[in-house]
Length: 118
Image 1 (cartoon, rainbow, N blue to C red):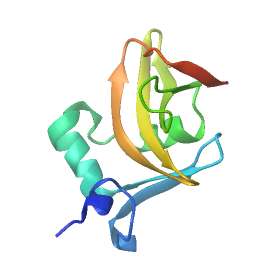
Image 2 (cartoon, one colour):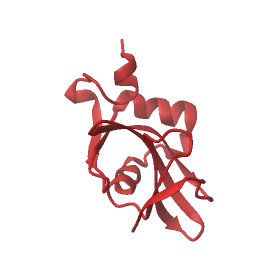
Image 3 (cartoon, rainbow, N blue to C red):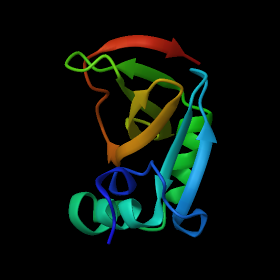
């Protein structure tokens, strides 16, 4: 059984369940488990299936990072795919660690405070 923390891509997940852990320009690591990634691509955004590398790249080398207006611990990382299309990786930061909330392609950058331009 997967615990709530493992489901969110953090906590005491076995190393074999860790899909990725990457550094961000904001100085914290973001991690995701295989189980949580499966939930994202099966229930939230099936279009992201097979796009793990793009999500990792978006987190490591974004074009822009915005802070959520609702939750100051939530960051939206954007990386351009082509004109007027971006990959968005949404994370939550807890102290010096972070986890992936979701990832999706988008044609619009959400409102929020820009905290890191490329």
